[in-house]
Image (cartoon, rainbow, N blue to C red; front, side, top):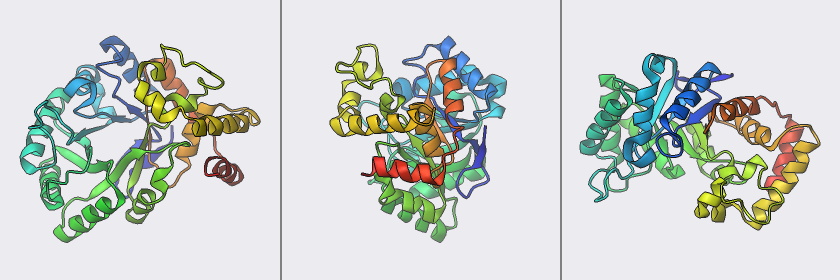
Length: 313
């Protein structure tokens, strides 16, 4: 497993990370235990969760139950900001909320520090200076090692960087955003911002909800037991004529080279600028093995150019 720096920071993470949003909802405790231990055994170090995953704390709780002594072997990343109460009282990036949110996450995770604490979304109601000062205090206290953001527009990333410099506080070292062969929107503004400020990019939904696994190729009706079948909004989001045609061309590309769609999806992202780790979930140990192997294809410059021709038209 290749290990990379997270942006300009000294934090080192595995090129393939484990997305933990399945734990506590689609994956029972014993299956989660097998997946977690298999991931560590195969060299995955970055474990990415959030306080809202699995019904307000469920994923963090599972990680806290399972990790035990192996906590020291991983880079544990979690998030705050999105609603943790039905009435909206527990959310945002104010000093008051962050101070309570981090303690709740630490308790559920059964640890005394978080390696990467990420703001899950931008909070327009709280000055970025207040947020950054609070996060810097947590870094100084040792409760948080590094900070990152997720789902920020590019101009908000620049705003946060300038504020951190002016205040002399810990800056964001990473950004986590959707990025895949069929969703390349961040290349317009966000990726250039990540390059300029040297933020480590952590792509999520690398398989576009399953679209890039190849299992939906040629299907006229989506099976009910698949992710698209169980979550209609995901089907509506990804399973459209444009993506179907694109995937057909990518399938021909990988078939001609003796590779799979899964290998292409992971390896292409791993070859993109600023990508530190590709975040992908897994519901079985076997899926972990597939994800790790999928990132091993070293695409040539000519192949990357051909892929651009297919995906960018």
